[in-house]
Length: 569
Image (cartoon, rainbow, N blue to C red; front, top):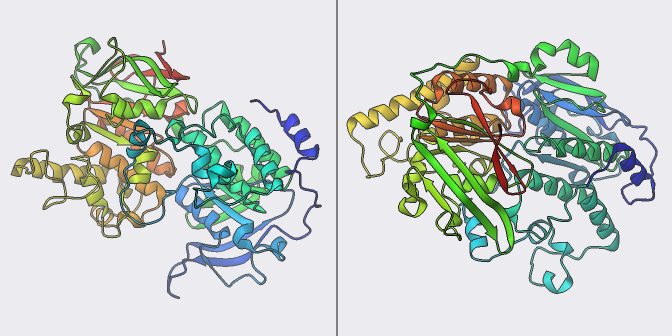
């Protein structure tokens, strides 16, 4: 599907249910007079999250919230969603144009910088989705997120389903076409990429018919081909005022051309105004060009690649769900010391391929063809215990981020310490695990303790300019951290045990610029060794810590397209 901006506008004007017929609102959409912002449980003596916040958004303006820090940017959007207390409270509320509506349903925050599973702090088994398809439990996108669109006979058994009106059905069909989701609705959830699931979440939010939709980091995890299409759709919906949209962007994200105004969030203060003025005035704080900074990696004695251990060997590897091929005849070798950039559009099979690398996918045990071969660390998957593989692969991914438990009692130290054994529950006297044999020597335990201290010191707040010491950060509750800080701790967890294979899947999502810059420098300068391989998954080439060129840490590229893979020259 390809819709130009002109075609989309014509579509909206042609009588579509999406076209909004009301005139521009005479009242401001958002009116926040000068006030301070606090958490609801803050005492009167507490310092405000935002001081002297003053912000007016008028109809016809196109706004983006850009954060020097991702956590602060998200908090400002949450202010609009009613999650914080304003003092003094604005007379008549912050949404004058909603005077005749309930803001509970009229304002919708869709955040891709936060964990979607907010109920409870327990671990959930993210690998179970592979098993569900293996057992022929074909839960589709439609059944999971849009059960109201099922035929009546299929809807009877779905307790979450309600009947959809004809008007709502027309809206659903139009949005499905615009977001190019029609071909995905009846596919198993496992077959969908994170980017495709992201579009489905936007669709679900639009079906609630909010007057104002807040989209936090909508471009993270979306491939380069889909990005301009998604932005065109969002621009068209906003122009039609159905709904009005405010975007939340990281400072390294390009600000779309159609954005006219920016709210820049920096260190507890918010500056608002026209895009050009704000970006010029605060260019030093909002500049995302650190992506392009390059430093020389520390090099050990270079061993020719063909002499280094083969960690992963794939020969004609296939994954299929019934008659649908997700991976087709994949041939890929990963050597110790390799740096790989795994590329591919949303839905090309990247997440499935990663589940083969980690040994989580049931089809990693048995390949249907006698010509197929899969070896992980020199052996077939069936010859490895899952607990062993968990110690050999350190991974950060959206699935790990969503699955990791948010127990109130788990500290940063404990969360990092689970990385040695690849578990999700802290064990041992010093909370650094027990090892595969259920016990550690004194020397092994001391090495682990020192490693936790090292990664917290080199990747934690003290390394990127904060006054919080490593010891203080290590004692904080993991669940109380911002989304970016939690992602950073999970990066520490993936690296702490120095596993032979490290997988960084959309690793920078939600992180602040200072965190990213420091972590990239750490990775380039000894954070991973010449005996470790790294696979980076991102749609933005500039996010890869290493560059293509000569030497042991030259980045190699493996590209997936509709399930087929090839190493790029």
